[in-house]
Image 1 (cartoon, rainbow, N blue to C red):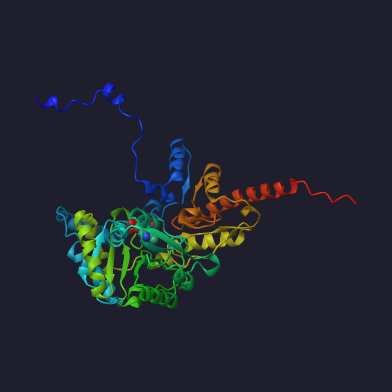
Image 2 (image 1 turned 45 degrees about the horizontal axis):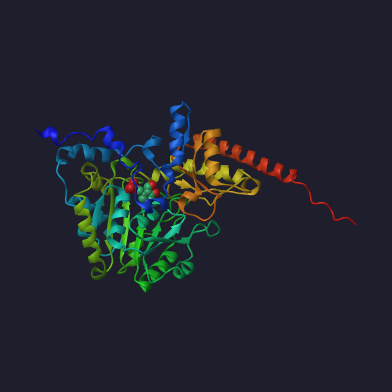
Length: 439
Ligand SMILES: Cc1ncc(COP(=O)(O)O)c(C=O)c1O
């Protein structure tokens, strides 16, 4: 009897249906995420054909032999039997208490577990907070270059990213005066990424104070992505924004993915700070959106307390002789030795963002170069234009491979750039010289 209702549509009936492909959300055409885009797809094809590639496109510590610290692994294993139920939509109380205590100890005002949201990585919380904040046409000031999820999440939540430049000539730091000229009646928030992905810049206190003043003056929310807060090199210091923001509404984002090398566990947190009167409606909106997705992945939440209260496992990797330090040194030295590259040395985070300069830079297209580099030299990098910049002569590498592999990578990059430079000089010398005008 039921069969009568569940007959699959016959082929004949299908063929009479219109053959147009399903339409997808239009604004997706404005969104880029080249870190895992076309080049990464081509890399998989090459690997399927047996090519061995060195892939530097994703800041994924586990893929480069790093492990999450043992005390975090143990924390999850010990509590596995308790991870079956959903948690509260904002996250496990013990995890939220640990996050609140961590930030309270670092002078974030009113850091309270009620103001903490645990999510499936910072990624989910970026989307959730912008969804809670934006109405169609609202604007968000986003750094250029940015970590492209910030632009994508703004666009997909009906907002408009407005870019403030962080140029290499200024150490990849923003100019607050320029930033303020971009504020309009539609601006709702300023995004900061500190330490920065992709540039590695760390923002000094005075600069942050000036940005807080802009937010206060124009009643804007500060959204600060501090996921690399403890990944610092050569004495660089990190200034958390929330203590400087004080009563100005602010959301601080961080998590287990980078400092604790546990990307795959998908654990991030967001802490709201600032005047209760100003921020409470946003807190309620985020709580509602959090409830709609029930809760974040539970097992990883059991590692938060251990991560924040346990031993420091990142500083040694970033200090002299540490694995990340040595790889960063290899990149700095390779760029300094190359006539085709210029680098503003990263002070923090897990990336370098070199510029191609000189003869190789003439007519340079970063995407085309990344494709050629992969096909010819077996190295996958991310073109700079993937990070929403108006120029096309940069690329990003992650600092996660060991120093020996990184030296090999830069030897190959230099080889590819030398070929380009030579081709460019040939083109110039082949161009017919303009004849002197007849006497
Ligand atoms: C600046 C920045 N924010 C957020 C994320 C996403 O982090 P999560 O793994 O917590 O989603 C990344 C990942 O690379 C990042 O670089």
